[in-house]
Image (tube, rainbow, N blue to C red; front, side, top):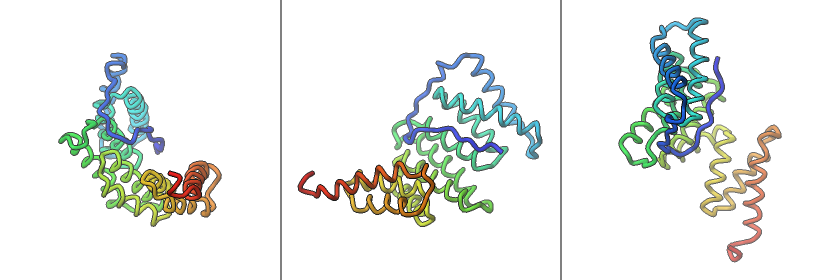
Amino acid sequence: MLTAVAAVPLVASGASGAQDVPAHDRARADALAVRIEALPSASAADDQRLLVEGFAAFIASMDAFDGPRAIRLARGMHAHAGAIWSAFCVEGALRRAAPADVEHGLSLRSFDEADSALVELLAGQALTASDELALTHRRAILAAGFARHGAERAALGRALSAGGIDGAQISGLAALTRGDDAAAARLFGSLLDAGHSPDVLPWPLRGHGIATLELLRGPAAR
């Protein structure tokens, strides 16, 4: 199974660098999209190889800010695979390629399609706790990128109640941003107290340290 997911920025930007992609790479991506869209519903070894090729082309399109090709490849892969990795591809491509104006009609449709891809997985199959948490975290990131703050807070709340690391970190950063240093210290501190592996600790340590220093300074020093 494909597991890697392209790293994407948080905010919808509408940026496109397709003009910087060599013509033969664009043509190859288009040909792969056509082949993936024609895949039968039953997966086979040849289908998997094609999905691997398609995923590589998807990553290249994302790196080049070629939104239309990334979206087409992601939609084709998800229609065939219906997996978490392919849903993340759809979500990331739609979020990255959406207009920067989050009130724009196209941007709103992009949000609805991306969120639906995640919700369908949450509702449609038995998931492990870690998979469900990953989808919930991604819904929070998606909502934040489209300035859907109510939806973001709801997803973060579900993530926090499930012990989500990203949920605590994102909520802690939000608390720092709004000046609620006590809440930030509690959120980051919860990660320090939870016995997570060392690779998790750098951000909680930084966040807890900043929040604690701000508390020690007090309101008069700000």
